[in-house]
Each structure stands twice: as C-alpha cells, then as structure tokens.
Picture (tube, chains in turn blue, cyan):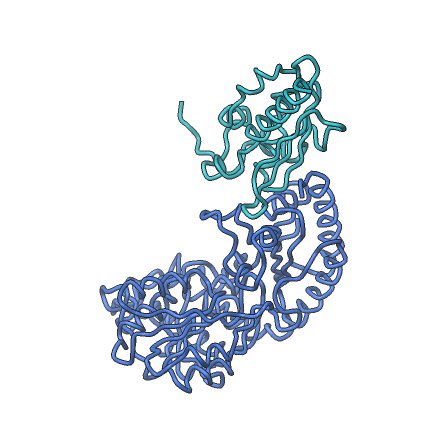
Length: 382
Length: 134
C-alpha cells in the first residue's frame, strides 16, 4: 500500500496519541471548573496554545483561538471579522483558487450586503499581484488568500500580498491549512492579521484547529454560548484534541525542516518520472510548491477512473479534482481558475506525500501509474 | 430484511470496470452510436455488427469515470445476440439494475450506455434505409 492523499487526511502521530491519551482517560476534566481536574485541563489547554503560537511565530499565546475545524476557523475570521469591522467597509476579497470553506463564507457575506471581488491567478496558480493591487481599496475590510493551495501545491508570496493588502485595505486572513507544519510560517514577519491552521495536517487528530488573531484585531463570535475562548468560540473545549494538536505543532516545529527537505527530494523524483508518461502534465508551480505536493493531469482519461484503478489494482490512494468525484459534478474550481479546459481538469490526479512515504515508493507508484494510464487509454473514446 | 446502505460502487460495477467486456471498435461496423461530451467528463462510443436483424458483435470505447466504463461494458453484454427490437428495449434502468445499482449521483451523468446502443441501432437503420432507396 502507498498512501498519497495526506492533503485529505493524515494518521495521528503515535507520540501525539501517547501524549494526549490521558485527557480522554484520567484527566478528562472540564477546564471551566475550579477543582484540580479542571485546572489540569486548563493547563493542558494553555500549554497547547503556547505550542501552536510558537509554530507560527505569534506574538503571544493569547492570539490563538481554538476551534473544532479549519472550516470553523475560516468562518470565524471572515464572517466574524467582516461583521465586527463593518465600519471599515463592506468590501471583501479572496482568490479564484481559495478553498470552498473560504469562498462559501464570502458568498454568505455577499448576501448580507458585502461586495465580493475575486482575484485571478496565473496558470501556475500564483495570485495576480497587480490585479490584487487594483482590487483592494480603502473600504476592503478583509482579504483572504490561501498560503498554499491543497490541489495544486502552489505557495503564494504572502509577504508581498500582505504589503499590497495593507497599502490600501485593512485585514489579511490567510488559510494556511495546507501549508502549516510543512513550510515555515511567521505571522509577524509576513504581516498576517488572521491565520487558519488545523491539527490533522500536523498529524494530530481531527476535532481541533486554530485561528491566529493578531493583537488588536477584533472579531465577533459566529458561535455564541458559554463564552469559552475569550468569548470568540463558545462550547466546552475538546481538551484531548487540543492537547494533541499542541503536541503535533511542537513536533512539527522541531522536525519540519528536516522532513520537508526529505520530502522535496522524493517529490521531485516522483514528478520527474511521472512526467515521462505520455500526455502527462504538472499542475501548479514547478518550484514554488509545497514539499509534499505532486499534482498532475493526464490527457484523454478521467481522474475518478484513475483513482479507482490505482486503489483497487495497485493499492495506491490518490485524489482527483475531476467532476466525477464531486457532489456538484463540476470539476475543481482551482483547475478551471488556472486555465484548464473542463476535459483537461477531468484528468487530474493529486498526490500528497507524508511521513510514511520514501524513495522506495517511487518505482511502485510510477509503475502503477504507467499501467493505469495504459489500461484506461486502451478503453478511452478520446 | 434490513436494507444495507450502498457505499460506493457495487461489486458488479467494479468487476465491469476492472474487466471490461468487448472493448474497442467493431471493424467495418454496421452502426455506430456516440453520446456524451468530454466537457462533462463522459464520452461513449458503441459500435455494432448486425446480421439478419441480430446484433452479432458489439464493442465500446469510453472516456469517463468508473461507472461510465462499467455501464458501457454491461450494455454490450446485454445487447450481444439480441434482435434490434429487443436491444432497443434495453433502458438505462436495466443497465443500472444489472450492475446491482449505481450511486444516485451517477444515474444521469454516466449512465449513457443504453443511449449509445440505441443511437448505434438508429445509425444502422438509417444506413439500411438509404441503401434501400438506392
């Protein structure tokens, strides 16, 4: 088996599980209570906040608000940020390749009277900085740009984007779900006001994510209730998931440099060999891309059938942006935004590497991919 | 009996996807039917040989997802050896039923095989009509 879909789900690091298991068994207290078991939980929560803050260079741990998912963190940043700061303006901006959990909250804001502008990208998926400069204006309350794209791996020039956004507009939100733990992020040096990251991308469990909120930036809660997380995210804290997230962030900070160098080597060898297949193309930027990310399109065949064949015949798991695996029957908006035709987008295959992948996987994957392409091209009507 | 929820494709769909029957194009075919559109992700071609109103040979080619390939393979199995009138009665639902069901979302977009078969038969009959005229 070769698992190549780390963008969609990762196993929990056994060290993380060993660290946090006690918060499900013995130390299961509610951090809002005052007896010792509650204080133990409170301590775990605050230690996790310190670790997550450190991973992204936040000025203080109190800048971190824990949520259950990255989708929720994005909603808090965008809906909570735009509504709270409506006085600054009612214009919001995102890119044509941002995640659906950014685009849909933006569309919700549109229904509440906000004007939404979409920044185009080039054929590599890099934000059109000139267009961004023309689009962002004094009443642009929030601009949201992904740090790196999970479908094509392209890393955005966030520092430059931040300078452009702040020249005329107000706050910059960055969805760093795909990037955090894989490449270094420094929210202060890069001029980021709000940033989303998620536990599972760091080999922590699902059920924990975080929003970094720069000191002084005000948001309104999207989930009112008992006032946990400084009133910004009510609901009893999931101490197990948050403690595990913290430990995963700590390990990522320690190991990211070495691991990313290792994965970059595997990735480049994999890309090189896959591109030797006839009518195969890279999607996304060739160099400015996530160390674990290899994404392609194959002419004349369709992504779902590639995925099925790789899984059932070769026990290799990949992803695709083809319409045939989506609920809407539309191909990935990311692939269309980088200029692919519908029939080209249907042939998409996304491989995201992780800790379990090594050089030894390359010949296995390449051989399986060659056989799969050959078999499906023998059937194709194109 | 308790009904089990169907997750993903049935075993029969996977069988036809992995071991498709009658792949290719009938040489000097008597009728060819093409349906679908690569823009939508599915394009299907069915070609037939007809002798005495009976489909004696049938082949398919498909660009598309797993169920697009499986339905085309299945329709060739269902139609082979049938008379043209019998083959015209094969419906999309028949194909899906023979495959032990398709995921609901796939019923429309990739279940085009019966249409391709019917088009191939129409194509054959039009050609026959033209030959009769001359």
